[in-house]
Every structure is written in C-alpha cells, then in structure tokens.
Length: 294
Image 1: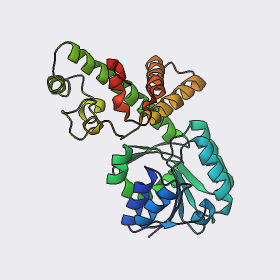
Image 2: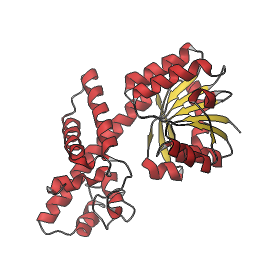
Image 3: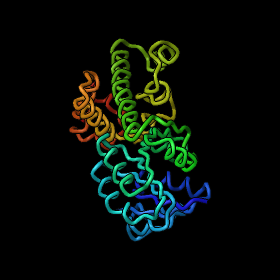
Image 4: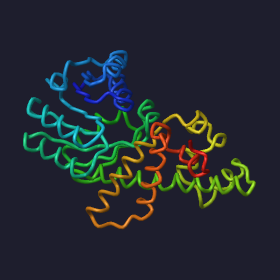
C-alpha cells in the first residue's frame, strides 16, 4: 500500500483517485470545491483541510489541475513541505514551459517528478483505462508506473521532463483536426442524401477510418457509446479541446513549427465556444458545421 496525496478532485481527478483507493492505496485528497470533496469522501478518499495537509506523510503526490499557473502555485506551496523522497506526478494538461518549471521546483528540493497528462476523458478515468504520457527521468518513471497502473490502460514514457505534455498537445491537435474533418464529411453526406450509417459503414472500414469516427462518431446511431447519443454531454468538453489547441499553437509558435490545420481547428473551436457551447462535448461542433449551432 502506498500513501498518495491527490490534489485536484474534479471530473477527472475524483474517479482517478477512486481507482487508487480500489487498488488498496491510502489516498488523501484536497480540492477547493466542497462538492468535489463530498464525492471524494464517498469514494473512500480521506479529505484533507488543505493541499499541504494532504501532502504531509505522502509517498506520492498527484496533481490534476486546470492550468500551468495552478500547478506552479501548488508545487511552490507543497514541495517544501513534503517529506524527503516524495514522488511528484502532475497529470494536468499544461504548457510545456510550466511542466518544466514544475520539474525544476521538485528537483531543487531533491524530489523526483514526472509530467503525466492523460487521454481518455471521464469515461477512461472512471474505467481505469486512461493513457498516461509521461515525461521525466527513467528513475522517476520506474517509480511512477506502478502508481499509475490502477488508473491506466497504457502508460508511455515519452522522454525527459515536459515530453509528456508535448505528446499530449500533439495528440489532441490531431484529435481536434480529425473531429472537424469527420463532422464535415457527415454534413456533406447529409447534403448528398447519404445516410449516417452508410457513410459510417464505408469510412470505418476504409481509408477514412479514425478514432473520431469509429469510437467517437459525432452523429447519433453508428457508435451507441458516443456522446452524440446523449445530446452531446461530455465526454470531453469543447472548452477543454480549445484549451489544448491553444496550447498546441503556443508550442508551435515558440518552436517555429508550421501547423495551419491546427491553427484553423483552434479558430473553429474558439467560435463554437463563443456561441456558448464550451460545456458541450467537442464532437458537437458538427452543429456549427451544419450552420445550426444556437
């Protein structure tokens, strides 16, 4: 049994922490929102009065927070208060520079750390099938991997500090672009009188097949588990997709990469979110592509 502090018990953090409890770990958690703490208590997490209290005595500290500035603030607060040898794992999706700064804060205090953002959404968090993309030293990864396994379908060591975040934003740029492409194809099919099922049956077994089509189809029917069948309830919210696409564009600009489709996807999701659709599933952008998003 490992003593784990989990800071950030939102839609992703709570089911992740619950899976650690189910695996037999002692989990102490903290979040700023009381409703999240109440859910954590029901899941068997020992709720702490503060992030510093959660970290006290922990072998491992996991953070799942909204943005880089939150990660840095928490690390600056709790790293000096953690006991020697504590492993820090940040599973937030943040910019690469913030991830590297968090690594430095931990390293300066003599702690091992990895950045380990995830893919798989709330469904994967609940099922314990998330993909973790880890950046950090081989030593840190070796210690982190068995901690991550109860929450994971796959854990991939992507390289040194910041590499996990780099992999995440590249992956989600592909996802954002491909969902728009799949949505446009269904809109065109509708105009041409082709049924959703007919297009799915062809494209899902042909060269057009991709995750956005075969697992997360943006129209109801062909994939019963996709958010399109529950009125586009996330899932993965459009606002989060926009966040990741913006992170990808920031990284592209700072590195000199040319990503015209990524830039266009960011603009389209920006428009969709500006229509008040940020809290719907990102696959719901098909409504805007049809011209019927209200």
